[in-house]
Image (cartoon, rainbow, N blue to C red; front, side, top):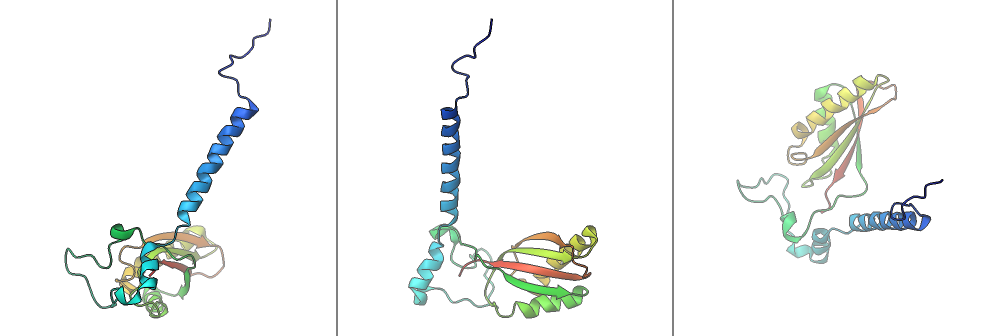
Length: 171
């Protein structure tokens, strides 16, 4: 006597196709939401005179928001293309190189920095990347105050060298 599976528990091709379709629809919805433009940047570009002036030396007073509140009109976006900076040497040299390389971006705030420390030894490469990421607030406190950083390795044979990918918030 063979046992037939219970009809409610059987996995049919049509049932699996339905779940696959639902999963793909979810992925497409997430991709569409992730590709939304930045409403604050669109408003600023449409009305440039209404945008607040940005001063790199101006610091917000205690309790006052630094720039237009991202929650009032929507979240800020992050630029797709990073600014790449190469640094090498000890902490003093790397800090000076970061400061010099970011002079062209006054008033900007970095959202994320991916740092790739070069070394054949993965531990040493990642440790150098961690050291360089620790120097960011020293080099430009206004730019890297609340920035997310990640330490990675590059297996190039170039010790005490790091490549930084800086992703800025949209204007």
